[in-house]
Length: 205
Image (cartoon, rainbow, N blue to C red; front, side, top):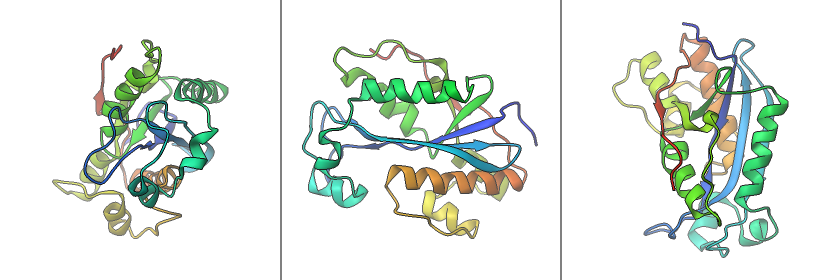
């Protein structure tokens, strides 16, 4: 099946976390994306940046063990507002907008929950979110359709089902994006189609 989207922007945030419950507010600490040319079935560019948490700058031991991101990695990083602006500029350089490209995530958490929380945690809160970030494709939905499953596993399970090797480290955002991009390409080659599976109304604040 074909879609009208020429590009997919695979996105996977890493955020402040702890073993029992995440800090409140939870904040993005890594903002990565991998750009996939849908027709060519190949990665054409990447964007990655650490993000300095405003409210909880000291990362927990659990967070570092899970993501490999240390407090010193984010201590001198830009705040979310600046990284978010750079990501939008990156999309613009590639002439990507909501009619030409779609964000692809593993589940609905990244853009459905984490982005609104992050936008509300910024001081002052971000009240205007471009339309590109307000709708996305949940890759698990494509996996279920192509693989004839009623429920999709996590990223590791999808890699195993498609006989793909894990690249890099799981729960490191940019590595997760690369692995999810490989899953996306495999599913597209197997007949999967990119479509909007979820959206959110803004502003969140």
